[in-house]
Length: 121
Image (cartoon, rainbow, N blue to C red; front, side):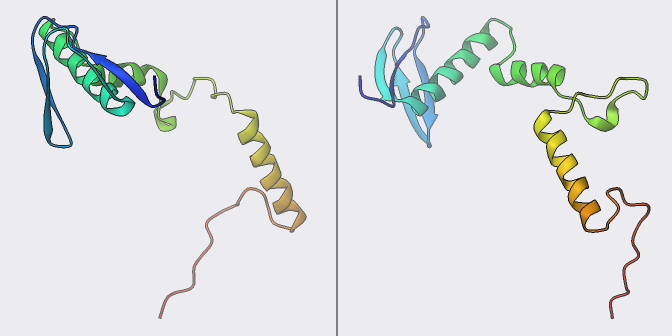
């Protein structure tokens, strides 16, 4: 099969029609069609959404959004007693490098206070 192509199959018992770039595409029950991979993925996602909604389940987007809440946290929302998050070695190295460069230039690596800006005339 040529690279970048996938076979999309309407595995449902009903016809499936969904637009791509404003053009509706219809697939009979059980029909398979060779498509560009991005189009095949587009139709597969929307067919899955339709079938999940019919079963009273979350759509793929709702499921992903709900699961992302488990994996992502705003730093400001962490409880004070919570342990600090692990910092990746790459970020730690960048921070240390920036601090060393600032010290070499005679600057304080951590600002002591806000700098006052000259008024604009």
